[in-house]
Image (cartoon, rainbow, N blue to C red; front, side, top):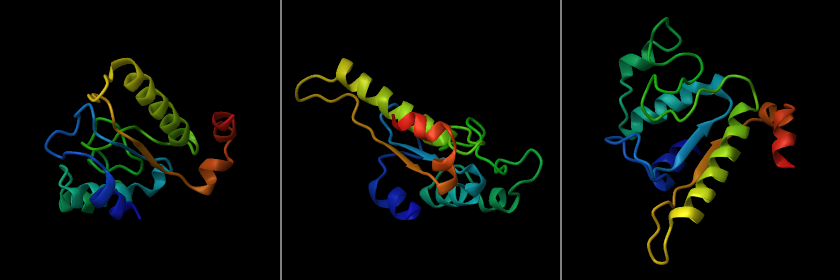
Length: 133
């Protein structure tokens, strides 16, 4: 599912990972970060096979939970379950606000999407139901 999302649907550019109008991807259950690092490698981001072999090693580019600004393509640091879910909602709200403020008729400056993979554990944490209200 993640590979199809990244290869067929996400609008992103590994050569410009901070492009303002890129789609955002959040892996809320950060303990599954090996999936994210593998996808980033396959998508052409600056994650090598050697980096993946050093998964969860001290000072590696591939720690046990994704860390924002440590490797390109990572949108946020995730740790506690539910955190990525809540941040994803915030990012989507921010996108809508920016689009309403800056888009012009027939000229969309902001038209990116926010995608998240969340686990059942994410949805059972207190922060998730509060965000859905």
